[in-house]
Length: 136
Length: 90
Image 1 (cartoon, rainbow over the protein chains, first blue to last red):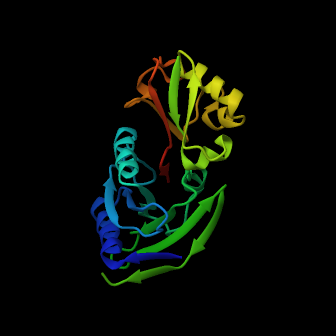
Image 2: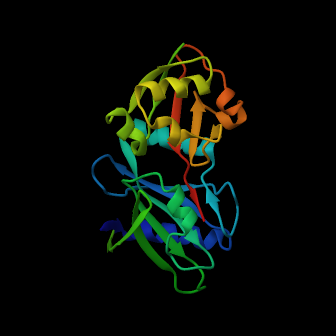
C-alpha cells in the first residue's frame, strides 16, 4: 500500500495537468527504509512527448546524488498518461528499474476527473496496490 | 587502473548486496569486463549487442558516457563510475 500526503498527490496532479498533453514525470524522495514519500521533485521529461517520458540523464544523476547525500530513496516515481488509463504500459514495465519504488500513474485523459493509481513493478510483474491519502 | 563503481539497487543481486565495488580498466568496456569476472551476470544487464543497454545510464564522474564514447569512454585511476537505471516509459 502507498500511504501519501494529500499535498503530494495534489502536486503530482497539478504537474500532470500543467504538462498535458505531454507526459509529466518526477520523483518523491523519502528517508531510506521509511517507505514514506516526503520531498517532491519535478523532473524534466527529456522526450517532451505525449506518449513517452524519460528523465534527463544529467538531472537524474544530480537528484540521485542529492538523495544519496540525504540518505533518501525514490519512494515514488510518477508519470502521467495523457490519453490512456493510469495503468503501466509495456514500455513502463520494461524500463522499471527501481524494485523498491511505488510507481504512480496519473491519467489526465479526462479534463475534469483525473485517475491516480499505484503499482509495484518487479522483474516485469505489475502489482497494483491501494493508495491511502492522508490529510496534510 | 582502478575505479569505483556505484551499483544501483536492482543490480546488487550480482554484487552480494554491495552498493559500490572496485574494478579495473582503461575504458568503460574493460571496466565492465572486469566487473563481469568478479560479479557474473552484470555485463548482460549493461551491454546488449556491443552497446550500452538503453535501460541504463552510465556516468564517468559527472559525465553521461553516451556523450563520451559509450563503451569506449576512457577512465582514469580513481574515477567514479555510476550506474543508474534509466527512468523512462510510455
